[in-house]
Amino acid sequence: MIGSLYSGISGLKANTSAMAVIGDNIANVDTTGFKTSRVSFANIFSSTLSQSGLEIGRGVTMNGINPQWDSGSLENTTSGTDLAVNGTGLFVVTDASTGSTYYTRAGQFEWDSDGNLVTPDGFIVQGYSIATDGTVGTLGDITLPNGTSAPSATSELSFGINLNSDAEAGDTFTSSITTYDSLGSEVILDVTFTADGAGGWDWAVAVDPTTATCATTGHIEFDTDGNLDSTNTTATDVDADGNPILSITGLSGSTDPLDITWTYLDSSGDSDGSITSYASESTKTAQAQDGYPSGSLQSVSVDEDGNFTGIYSNGSMIPFAQIALADFPSYSGLAKMGSNLYAESLSSGQALIGTANTASLGSVSSSTLEMSNVDLATEFVEMITTQRAYQANSKVITTSDEILQELINIKR
Image: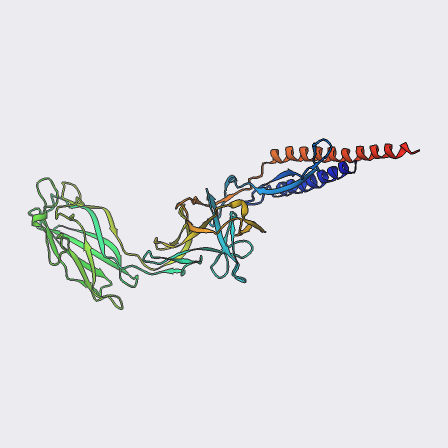
C-alpha cells in the first residue's frame, strides 16, 4: 500500500506541473507571437513481482513540455514597423550591451532615438544594408538612412504635344517644363514652336534662370497623317537615335553643361507618337522628366521580401535594408529567454540566416502582428481533464490511507 501512496503523489506532482503550463498558456493568450506549450507524461519504471512475473507501475512523471509552433492569426495594425513572418522563420535581434543574439516571432518593432529598429526591450533588429547602387552588405543593425536624399539632374524629358496643322506662318506655341540641375535647383525650359507655313515647325529653348542658355535648336515636319516625319526632323545636337540633346550652359555652381535628351524618336529612329500635327488647337497633353530635387525622409515601407524603402518628399523611393530571418533544424529545441525571445541551443541546432521568400523561409507582412496561437477552448478542456486527474490521484492517496488504517485496526 505504501507504493500506491507514492503513485498517487507522483500523479499529484505531474498534474500540478501540467496545470502550471495550462495557466501559462492562458495567461499569454494576448501575447504577440506566443507559442502554446503541450505537456507530455511518461510512466515510471515498473517493478516486477518475483512470485508471479507481474509488473506494477510506480506512477507518472512529466516527460516534457513541447512548444507548438503553429502560426498564430495575423492582425492588422497602424504601424508600418509592426512585422509578422507569414510562414517559417524568426526575426534576428541582438542585445547591444552583451552582443548576444536572440530570435523572436514578435515583430512589434519601432525606431529608437539613434535610428535603430528595436524591440520593446531595446534589442536591435538585424538585417542586410543596401547601398544606393543596390549592393547588399553584410548582416548588421537595421538603421534609418540619412534624412535627406541626394538630388538627381534631369537627363531625359518628353512631351505629348499636338501642333495645329492649320497654323499659319509665324504662329507660335510654347510648352514649359521644370527640370533640375546637379544641385537639385529648378531649371525651367520654355520650348517655343514657330510654324513655317508649310506644315513644319522650328523650335528653340529659353531657360530660366535667364543667366543660362540653351544653344540647341531644331526643326520638325509631319507626314500627311499628322505623324512626325523622322526623315525631315533635325536638330543642332542629337543622340544616336536622332533625338535632340538640349545642352544648357551658364548654370551657377552645378555641373555645366546640363545635357538633357528630348525623346520623341524610338530606338529605330521612327516617331514614338508623342508629337503630332492634327487639325486641332495646339496643346500639350503630357510631359515627363527624370530629375528631382533633394528630399527629406517622410516614411518607411516594408515589402513582403523584408526590404525597407525610404520614401522622400521629392517622390524618390530608396531601399536601404532587408530584414534577416532565421530557420532552425528543430524549433522545439529553442531555449525560452522570456520577453518573447528564444536562444539557440544544442537541441535546436545552429541558426540558418537568410532573407524572406528564400529557401524555406516565409514572407514578411508589414503593419501586421502575429497573435498568440493559444486555443482557449482546448486549454479549458485540458484544465478540466487535469483537474479531474488531480482529484482522482488524491482519491488514490486517501483510499490507500483508509486501507492502511484498516490494516492497523486488525491488531486491535
